[in-house]
Length: 339
Ligand code: NAD
Image (cartoon, rainbow, N blue to C red; front, side):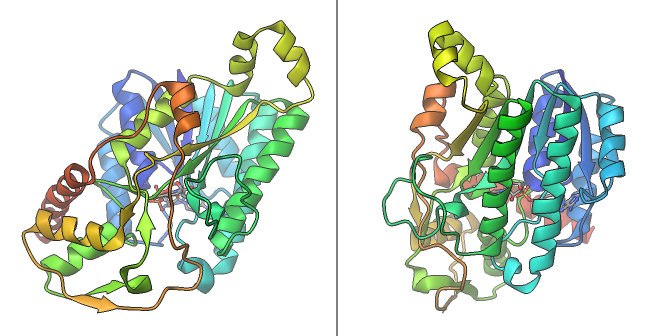
């Protein structure tokens, strides 16, 4: 298959591209190499992907429709997976315009591209943040998710809504992933695991928001990629077709559109997470207890029922295993950077 993936210099896009290349597919990556975090990490990911002669990279910003269309010409994609975005809850308070441009205008450009190309399947990355402070757990896709606490979540909610209208109007089978806190090797420097590991190994205190009273449903990156790869093979329209003719008629007013949580349904309290990082690093953390940050949600907790029903798969890597793999990678990365 031929894939166009946006955000391949990013954490998740890199892992996804690497997996699809290993499975024998052709991958064209599109990424703006933004300066949100250390661009050397993005360059290093690109260098790994460039080892495959089935990988091509087009550098450009989503907001520049001509650059995106140029990538599509190179890719001739059967499947489009849209991961590029301005991520991060806290930065959306500092730099709101970046979120509107990347996540709304940029995603709209991807939708226009899909409208023109009519790929077999369009998949887009949304987030568990859109469930907000919903007290009913676990979060099922059928839960109300219309009270986002951050502009990051709001732009992802807007992206989902735009994608639904495009699926309805133009018929491109579309899947929205709601990712739950993804972690693992090559992870993002702005996320908790990287920051905690970095601080603990450098004898600096770590900022513990919400006085440690938060919980996150952490998803190990290889598990997430397994789920994404399986879902990419089952566009929503196909799923309706296998149910039978009667169902097609009954659903004919519905868009070929679906939203799927990608998380294991096993939230880890923040203080347990810190103990796991201490164990993996072999060092004690110094804690700097802080109030909850504006925009943060108190907990995330995936209901993985739909993911399992569709794919037969539920993320299940134990947090201890995943964190240990991250710390091992982190040490190598730092050693290389210092060399
Ligand atoms: P990342 O920041 O590592 O990767 C995003 C990539 O997109 C970067 O390489 C960046 O250069 C690129 N990019 C950003 N804005 C762009 C633009 N306007 N034009 C072109 N390229 C642009 O983030 P990630 O963790 O790999 O996240 C991938 C996707 O998953 C994002 O959509 C994010 O919102 C979503 N997500 C991630 C998590 C997580 O825990 N990592 C959780 C929920 C949702």
